[in-house]
Figure 1 (spheres, rainbow, N blue to C red):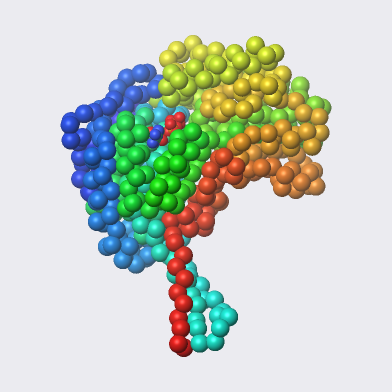
Figure 2 (figure 1 turned 45 degrees about the vertical axis):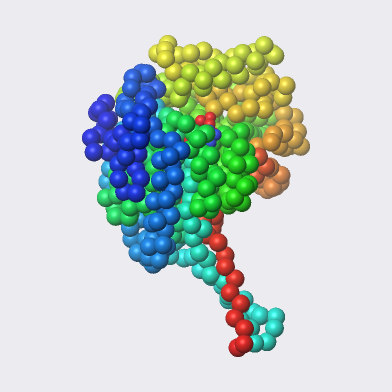
Length: 486
Ligand code: ADP
C-alpha cells in the first residue's frame, strides 16, 4: 500500500553523471509536480548543454572497459539491477504514481514490465551470435561478428517513466554500449531512482548517465550534433521525432524512433461483445488514455453498433476516477493542463460536427487534472479525433458497413503503431491482420505489450523495434570479416 510520502533513498534531486550525483553548474532547479494535486514533489537539477557534453564524455570514457567485459559479466550486472528493481517494486511504483499520476495497480505493473526488459536483455546479450558464410571464391573464408554501436543517447517521455527507459537502456547495456539518458522533465524521479539501483547493482561509472533538464532543445542539440554519440533512441511525439531525425542527419546516426499512434480498434458483427468491451476498456483507458498504443478510434460494425455502444458506456461510466493514493482508483489525472485542453478540444470539435456524448465529456468533479472517462458516438472521419492522437480518456465510436470499409477506415492515417480487432471468423482474422498497416495487431486482445514481443511501428510511427530478440539488434553493428590466402 502507498504511504503518501515519497520513499527516502530512491528519491534523488540531482542528475547522475559519471557515477556521481550532480547539480546544475549554475545551481538551477525545476519543480516536479504531482498531477493529482498540483503540489511540488521535488526540485530537480536543471542541466543544459554544458553538462550534456560532460555526460557524453563520461559515456565515451566508460565505453572501452564496458565493451570489453564478457557478455556474461554484463549479464550478471544487469540481473542484479533487475533483482534490485523488483525488491523495490512498491517504492518505485509509489514514486512513479506521485510524479505521473497512474493508479497503484498500473504503477506496480509498469515497474514489473520495465524490469522485465532488463531480465530479458541480460539473457539476450549472451546470444549475440555472428555467422560463417560459405565463400563464393576458393581460398577465402567469410564470417560476421556483432559489435556494440558505441555511445547511445536516449530521450524518453513521461507516460511510462520507468519502462520507456529500461527498454532502451537494457538492450544498449547488454550489447556493450554506454548511455546518456534525457528523461522527460515531468517525470525525472523514476529515472533517477533507476540510477540509484543501477549504481547499487554495480553498473560502472559513466556506463549509464542521466541528464535532467527542462531545456530539451538545448540538450537534444548537443546529443544529436555529437559525433561521439553513434545512436539515438527516442520515444515521444512524431513532431519531435522528425526534428531529431533531421538533426541526426549531419552525423548519420543510427535511429530508433517510437512515435505517435492513432490505433484503430475494430469490432466486427461476429465478435464476442463482452470480450470486445473489456478489450476496449483496456486498450483505451489504460493510463487514462495516455499511451501511444491506446485505441484512438473505435470502429464498430453496423449490426452491433448500438449494443456495443450501450455496453461500453455502462462499463466506462463505472470506472473509478481518483488519485493513486486511493487504492480503488482506476483512472488517474492527466499529466498537465495542455492534455486537458486537447481532450476538451477533440470533444467539442466532434460534438460541433454531430457527435453525441454517451457518458462523461467534462472535467471531473475532483477538479484539477481529472477528466471524466468519456464515450462519444456518431463520430466521423471529418472530425479532428479521427486524425489526431487524443492521448486522453475519450472513446470515439465510428460506424462501418463491411470488412473492406473497416480496413479502409483503419488504414486512413499516417500512423502505424498498434491496431486491434475483435472477430471469431478465422478467415476474416487472417485477412484483416494482414491488411492492417501497423507494426502490432491485437486480435481479440486489448493489451499486447510485453518484453518478448517486438514493439514498434511502421509509416510515421517510427523506426526499429524494442523488446524481443530484435530489440538488441538496434544496438549492434554487423561487421563482415573476409579472410584471404587460406
Ligand atoms: P510529449 O508531448 O509527450 O511530451 P515530446 O515529444 O514533446 O512528447 O517529448 C518526449 C521527450 O522528448 C521528452 O523527454 C521531451 O523533453 C523531449 N523533447 C522535447 N522537445 C525536444 C527537442 N527539441 N529535442 C530533444 N528532445 C526533446
